[in-house]
Structure formats: C-alpha cells, structure tokens
Length: 141
Image 1 (cartoon, rainbow, N blue to C red):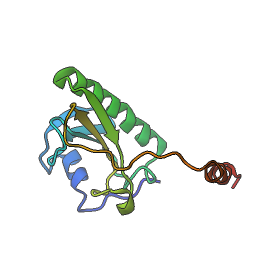
Image 2 (image 1 turned 180 degrees about the vertical axis):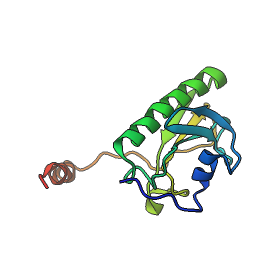
Image 3 (image 1 turned 90 degrees about the vertical axis):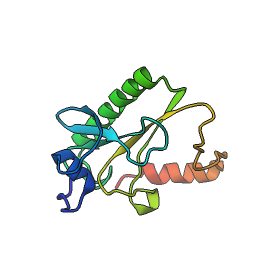
C-alpha cells in the first residue's frame, strides 16, 4: 500500500541524507528530527524511512514503527527538556492540515502559558448522530 517515493519529497531527502536536518532519534524503520518551523522548543517530527504519503497510505508495520518512535521521542523530550506536557498529532491530506506529504507525527513539548491553542472547542455530540455514525462504521462491507 505504501506509495512510490516522489522525487521531490523533502522528508525522503532528510532520510537519505541529501537534505540536512537536526536528527534526534533513529532506528531501523524511522527517523526523528527537529521541525525547522517549531511550535515550541524541541518540536520533533517522526517519519518512516520508507515513503508513505500519509497514515492511510502506510503499511501497518511502518505506522506501528512511527508510533513506537514517537513514544521514544516523547520520553526523550520529557527527560531532557522537562516540559509541563506533550502534544502529539498527525495530519492526513490537505483538508486534514497536512503540508508535507510523507507520513509524520509531530511531538510537541508544551509549557503552561505557551501560545498554542486547541484547534477546536470540545462540545457534546448529539446521541442520535453518534449512534447513526457508529452504525455506519460497524456495518460489514
């Protein structure tokens, strides 16, 4: 399911060493490096070494490896930077706020009073709408 590597993929260039990056963690399947447009100090991106456009394109092993590495990076950031909290997020496709089309997870250290805000205001869902959606998702294909 993983797509072919586009010639212009920035993150593939970082993985293969042709584009410089501030690498903070690496294993056999993933690479983690500082975001060059950080939301906070230590904002790190975790990517699979094999190109996948996004989570929907990645094979299960690559997706699992990225999440294991994101946890390792969160622990590293917590230990070395001592933030008050941590936010991890992952975006898919343009409508989902994805900017670079190579699967990546943002691991962002958080400090009380930083200027980051939630992207939505939590509100209770309507019970009938939740039940209807649950039924659609449980349906056998």
